[in-house]
Image 1 (spheres, rainbow, N blue to C red):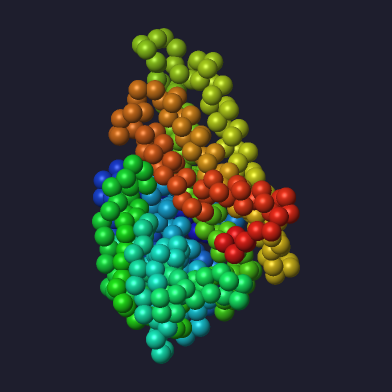
Image 2 (cartoon, rainbow, N blue to C red):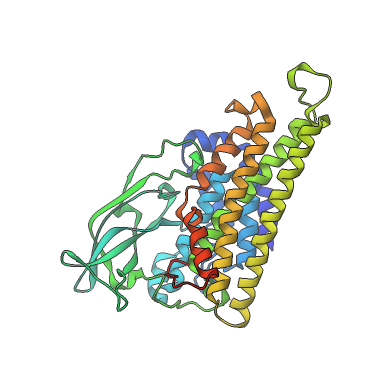
Length: 382
């Protein structure tokens, strides 16, 4: 748990730089380098490659702690960590050529917004992806693609389109500054594009079909479960910080020039207590699902569909509950919270942008509900 202890010390630094991160609209290069050296971008990289290969439980705890300092920085760590998870699926020699040192940062977008076609010993890849968080500091990027056969989609035996993640050097991509947003401003999540680049066959992975090359229970754990877990963990850490911020503000804020502080008012006490309960319940549900899935990965070497669905449900619930908790804290802050200099303003905006991610969007509830009812369901993205 050494990394978690380091994160607890580092969150004060992140909190002090939060406004600078937001104003930069990206993670500043010097801060990214510091985080890379500390290991926050290689948490899920196999130990055999020089990574940390920590447990999903510690991954969640570290991200929550970083997000308590600044959600944008934690989001970049989450994206870099889950992007680097693709290294576990590559042939060892190929992975070693990418992860050449501890400060290598990977990023990318899982959504299959690109197209790829086999050409001899490589793929020809073109694509335009949104939400390329932290890409400005990356050495390598990856992008989801649909495989093509001429003008037609290549399909699996079940008829589903064949998708693969393509991994390529940062220099081969164009980064497009589209990131003018309300929250998570410091993630630099603009667009990226490539046009007709070559990607060696061995430098691509299918996260739904291929099996990991690296060994360990971490790589039995569902990839999309880890991605959703990362989002939920950032959201929970951000919401906890919002509660801490309003708790501090309430001790001295006297609304309307009254004699009683916000903390001394019954309505504020009740709202704060309800928000605490909501946060604690969402966090407990997530930890319960996480421990159950991690236990199966360790003991059985596989996860049943119902367990994976419960984890995704818990992640979605935690993320969306965190947004509600941040809203309550923001509302309690009253007029003070509307100023951009107030931490509650940033926490509120960051919380609601996190809910926009497709891994924790409302359709996840439908997915979990279908499985609970025993209906035929496409579980490839589970």
